[in-house]
Length: 286
Ligand code: HMG
Ligand code: MG
Image 1 (cartoon, rainbow, N blue to C red):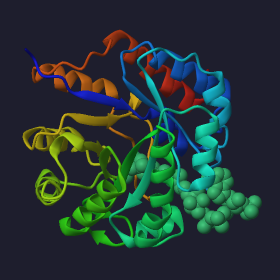
Image 2: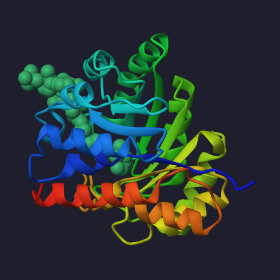
Image 3: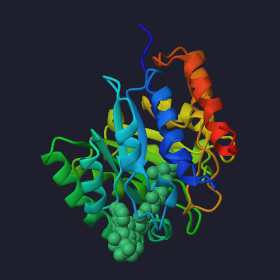
Image 4: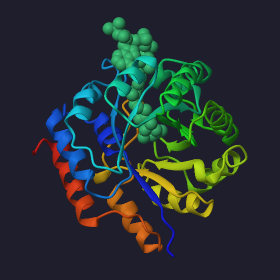
């Protein structure tokens, strides 16, 4: 039996959050509706963050209200604090994500908080969500390199992973936010994190700035990870991480995994169509 790898589609959030053009809500809804037909189990559709910080994500509630939900697909959103959680809960998300950084520089730039302060905020969010039956993913950014602090020691990533696990995150997504991670650095980071968290609770989130994302996926597959994040059309980046170019493209990741003999359950034609739609949205051609 071929082994299954889950691809988590993050394009509507991690892709669109970084676009210069303010994307109309109905275009976001159309993209999510198409993605809902592609076979994903999870689609990250929104962020309930400060609209002053990320104006592109200000319409998260409208996006979640407007989409046609498909059975078996969980629609997820980022929540940095209790206010964000309240918004996401009211919008009916089934899973939220809190997002920490392994480096202090990015934590300050992205959350206006130190790593410890951010974990303190997340603790209440995670406890409340779990009490409500909402599952929580924990992201860690800058797992190999930080745009402000430079190379990040693997031990720092392990400390944050351990904290997110202790809080009750069911999954930890390891973000190479600026796509500077080499396979060697990713491997060393995974070795440290696997000392504190099981491989089946880890996901790889590799931006493709340096064209190494698929190599980093391979290293993570070797280490036993079976969940990866990507964005159709290779959209995205992070507005608070200078140099964070596109995410790994879902179409490329899917083709790569299939070639390696894994099953993803995705419909190739639909993700290709969604990739084209995403690129048109970027250029304002829709
Ligand atoms: P702050 O300025 O320290 O917070 O920002 P504050 O509490 O002083 O609030 C500032 C204003 O925002 C206030 O409004 C709040 O009410 C409002 P004002 O009184 O000035 O009118 N506010 C909110 N509004 C809506 N929803 C909320 C919310 N919270 C406060 N939830 C804060 C702190 C965390 C809010 C801010 O830093 C923030 O929103 N950061 C989010 C940044 C972000 O979304 N970055 C991109 C996602 S992370 C990423 O892309 C990496 C990832 O992909 C993994 C990887 O690649 O590594 C996940
Ligand atoms: Mg990202």
